Image (cartoon, rainbow, N blue to C red; front, side):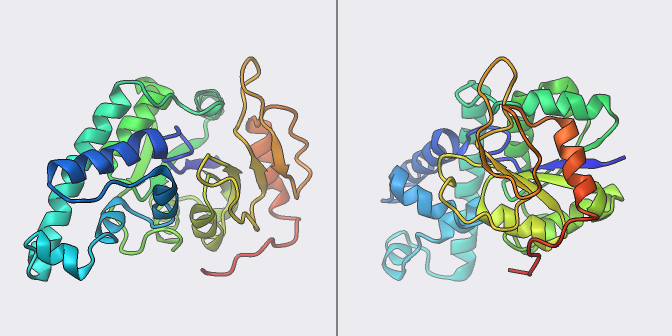
Amino acid sequence: MPALIFDCDGVLADTEQYGHLPAFNRTFAEYGVPVQWSVDEYAEKVKIGGGKERMRSILTPDLTSSLGLHDEAATDAAILAWHKRKTEIYKGLVESGVMPGRPGIARIVQEAHDAGWTLAVASTSAEPAVRAVLTHAVGQELAAHFAVFAGDVVPAKKPAPDIYLLALSELGVQADDAIVVEDSGNGLRAAVAAGLRTVVTVSGFTREEDFTGAALVVSSLGDPDGEQAEVLDDPHGAGVRGVVDLATLQALLDASSTAPSTGTETP
């Protein structure tokens, strides 16, 4: 059976601006770190894969010294503590319901489950945060059917393909039998480098990014009685009319064996 693999942030829910950003800023405030990212500043930070890596990016020599982080061990310990607290804050925001699942997510997960597809999430975010978003987006019953690959389970984060290569290996699925839903250029590059056909559902932070190599680019997966999917790029002629459904994904998988490559160079 085919596999459907989702990224988390920006795919399952619009988590970045309303979840991760305030969680980072609250954490910085609690720890006396004199940094508060604006939306525009955070739009640049989301290009860095991984929350700990984003936090580490603020550490200039002067800031490190002012915070009393006098060696690498102290810096690493501080980053781990900050990130643990940030994840706690973020989970609370998810559970409060401020970030509903994106259009079409619960629908297509139900379709895939009913058809016997393998379901998974592959994300650079911390696993507790990913599981919280997943459960909130699709419900506890469907979430129980997902394999979750998240956080530091691989040494190199997106745009490296490692997380997707791990998912394929652990799921026992060939790349030709799996399709990914991503929202960012980094995520797309990771999936394509792993040989995976990829649908991009753009988010507010990623709409203007380069999605060369995507099998389909849409505003969202869409819902019949709700937000309709706007098609931004359809190189395989999927012919989406308001909704990306399981038949669309199967057609894109079928096209992978006959269509010319759209670019799978390693980033």
